[in-house]
Length: 296
Image (cartoon, rainbow, N blue to C red; front, side):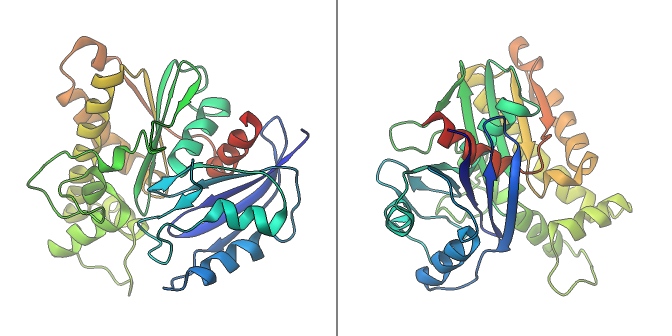
């Protein structure tokens, strides 16, 4: 197979690309994820995005939860899709095989293949953005689990008495550390920003300028991330965690308190050697979806 078509479905944007067997992105397109209650509007945006491309196999990474075996997706941040039969619809539209996994799985595949986690024996990849997704690679194998949702670190519970999460539980990592969660908490504490619809990028800019509330928001989110990461590391003996996504793009604003909390909370010797790194790949979602198709 010389190239594959890759699709990355997120709560904020849809991305697609044509990817070669060495991971080179030969063509790339990005559009916003439609804000709508109509599932066909979202699917129409996907078809428009993919229209210029053609390849023998389509690899798809989607925000979850999802059922990669049944081919359905129910992204928490795309409420129009609940049990949407994405694989069936894409197969009908293109007449090509379609392979599906979580966006966190695809991110982990990409960073393990070509990015910061290359060569890791036990990798957790994390996408910290509109939500918090994850994927596990152990002994060079992507771990899906019986439901296809293994590695969903964003819904590890770090405080049962914590804030409500979009998944229906309480105190999940995502409820503390996603971009919207950081912004929501900062606003509740009196953070003032000129932007009409504040984002995590605005919050990071305020933190970089020394705003104490913004800094406290990132510290609070980093503590929850550290707790989730160390819990996962204790269970499966991770050696590397790679973090990407829009919130991770804030760089030291997130990673400085995260490394500090990892050092403070890591008790066992094998946890203290854990590497926690920023992602290297700017198009990890698309590259990982392609890796999924190549591994098919």
